[in-house]
Image (cartoon, rainbow, N blue to C red):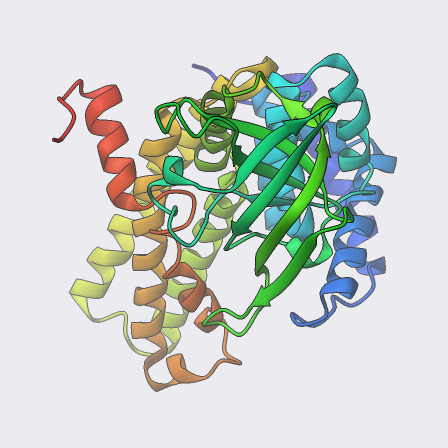
Length: 376
């Protein structure tokens, strides 16, 4: 597959680079990590700027090379990340684009792209994390509504979200993978309680969400009733296959910074460190090629498929090793939360758990790619 720049792609890259050069210096200061209303306003403001400049389409309606060029250039320029728009732009939005009705796409996709609404992810529960299909949050039909009761945990951006991509059990008598439904729940509906959770890094981008007979219109169901597990696999394939694409570019940048710091700090004479840095460079180059494949697979309404699990598995461990290596280069300064890479190292610890644990990814690769039998 040839993903080199065509003349049109090269023109897009040059135009985007020029726009970033002119626009980024005028951005307001980024709010503190604890100021979530401020962070929401900042992140949505940035998305609106992208929309007004004609760049918001790259997430769903562009060629693979255009999307990859956008990710490369925005990261290299130090542009803001999607932030509070993460779930809407990279999880719920692509799922609705792939599985929603025309009316649902018209209702939910434009506000996401214009930076008007934030989504959160209501998948995991206290007893249904890696074994997501064991979820117990219950929804039953009452006329034109589902009535939902239960709880969710690790709900990304729930404290500032307008909508939640929610998994519920609509048939408790069915096999656990067959009685699940995917709903879009308005976060201002009566009966919702949100309690933020503070992470090891000190931030609170996750929350517990408690649902007490929350009424969700049946029209907000994406896919058929009890077909939510299949829709969920679409969401997770985007989460594992394309949502981290920009972070691969960031890791390649950080790797170069770590190498330069190693030279400045006198660590470059250590052959073991040099070998580790070289292997990580090869790892992230390979991950970028896999990213190109996954993004190409997801363009035009497709999904990344099981290639997303291959990416997620390798990327999670490569990211952890990168920041462990950065800590080795920093030495005692790796305990200073104000130093570069320290908070990133703490957050990297969650990557082998978030979006499906490494053990789950290995099972998926073994069963769906290698054709090995399922464990008993």
